[in-house]
Amino acid sequence: MNALVPLPVVLPLCVTGLKLAIGPRLHRFQRFISIAVLGAVLVLSVVLMVSADRHGPLSVHLGDFAPPVGITLVADRLAGLMLTVSSAVTLLVLVYSLGQGMADRDDQAPVGVFHPAYLILVAGVSCTFLAGDLVNLYVGFEIMLVASFVLLTIGGTATRIRAGSTYVIISLFSSVLFLIAIAMTYAVAGTVNLAQLAGRLQEVPPGVRTLLEAMLLTVFAIKAAVFPLAAWLPDSYPTAPAPVTAVFAGLLTKVGVYSMLRTQTLLFPGHRLGDLLMLAALASMVVGILGAVAQTDLKRVLSFTLISHIGYMVFGIALAGGGGISGAIVYVAHHITVQTTLFLVAGLIERRDGTTELTRLGGLARTAPLLAVLFFVPAMNLAGIPPLSGFIGKLGLMRAGVADGGGWAWALVAGSAATSLLTLYVMAKVWNLAFWRDAPPGAEEEGVVLESAEDDDTGDDTDDDTGDDEEGRAPGSGEASGSGRPAESGSGLPVPAGAVVSAGFLGQSITTTKHLPWPMLVATGAAVALGLSYTVLGGPLTTFTQAAATELLARTPYIEAVLGR
Image (spheres, one colour):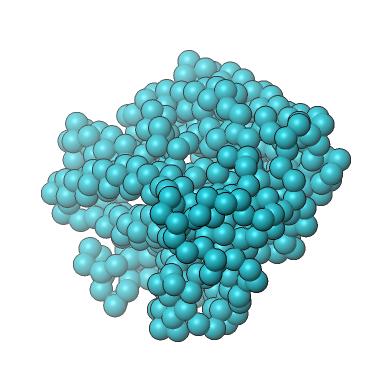
């Protein structure tokens, strides 16, 4: 069974190589193998999760080199659950993207940019969850960074390049800080293997240990978008195509949370920075949700709620007890799914009405009842309405806070309740503006082409990009520019309704339609069902996360699985 541990990393990378060898040909085959490999990763993740639950952590030393020389991959209950949830979400987002016509949509793009980059991203996420040492944790982050920059800037529009550049600069800063922390850790402990560090760091002077803890927490807080290190997120994520935004918002920030969970429990038990973490958690909750209240664009609303609800997970980590860790794990699994689903729904709204600006939306509950249901269920789940999984996670965290009894813990219990109520207010505001009220005057009609070239004043040829779609070049794979006007061709003349135009170099356009592609609807509906399954399976899920929390705090099962003693 241990031999299966590397496969969630290896399979996507191998298929990426195959796709690069195929090149921009055989579009249907490329889509098939992408779905097949992510389906296989999902099955493997479930097998690893069940095996880790029944038999304890699984580990493998690549090349049969023992620590600290070799590369160690470890799958325990926490890693297995994160792999399973992330694999399910990435598979659904891929199906959604196929319906949107984003993947391999331009034969001029080198080897079909989206699928290879997406599979590399999945490999990076899996590497992070399975990493048994700090160096490979860093490698996983860097794999994700390379792939995410490609995905964020796909389409080549100025806004995406600008937002992607901000994201890369912040990520590179955190990467440099991570490298410094790894070098310092190796200097004081002589290893970067997590199982070995669990013992050796306890012999390091307390001041040095606290410095290492602070540096690693800073790195992971940037990745997780914990306030005050989250300013980059609201401007970076909403500019990307809807499937990219969905998987980034739902998954990538949780990689930072996972890293905090792993290092705080394994390397720094009884950590000395608990109060600082609680302060950051409270600030993230309050500032994030107040930012969401002030927004009028659905994507920015969801981006700020993302920052806010990261605070719940940090709250559980800061409590450092079994109840808090268990609640944090439940909330991570819940939030990955629900946040991804809400961004997928935002993409559906944008494709249907050409905008996510709430002041220009209305009447969707009457004209698109299925879309209304797809939004309402995860929105209430995010707000924590009983008996949904959001309520289960929040209740577990608040009970752990009450059991802790400290001043900061009580402040966070109050902050959690207030944030939950404000989240409900924000979701009700979105519902009232976009779904319940009548459509405002000037709402987009079906067939309006949006997101024309931002800087195309040169009269470049656009005729070749109009007309019938070729295989693999389905219309509608970008985002609305928010101009509210029909797009214009390079000649400055209006583009006829229903036509598809190029938005510049590898740019993408949306033609609004009331008939949404069925893969997008199926994928979003499946994501809603996945979120609801956490409610139906709330008892087994809670039992599993409690066992995972006990295993994390005990540390011995992980150490013995890696070091064999």
